[in-house]
Image (cartoon, rainbow, N blue to C red):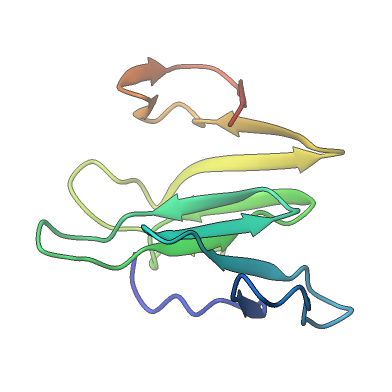
Length: 127
């Protein structure tokens, strides 16, 4: 995943602060210091990308809009909402549908897996 810039505000909250900042158009993210790490909390579903290479230390949150999120390559005939690349990735690889808090992965006949288990048909996602 490359060139992805979040289109939502990120709020950094320290333990002594309880203010939440954000835009009325986009859901805020709360970043809370826990002493040993950071806790990120959001009210909307999202994907978490743990980087695109072995040495990558970046973590990217990709919000899932209500409706269909298309995932595939840059060269797809229909523009993709999230672009990915690599061996075995198809131009229009899969779709994730979000309807009323229910999130479904449709592999569109391509190779996808959840926690290492192949997904061959539309499958509801859980946390």
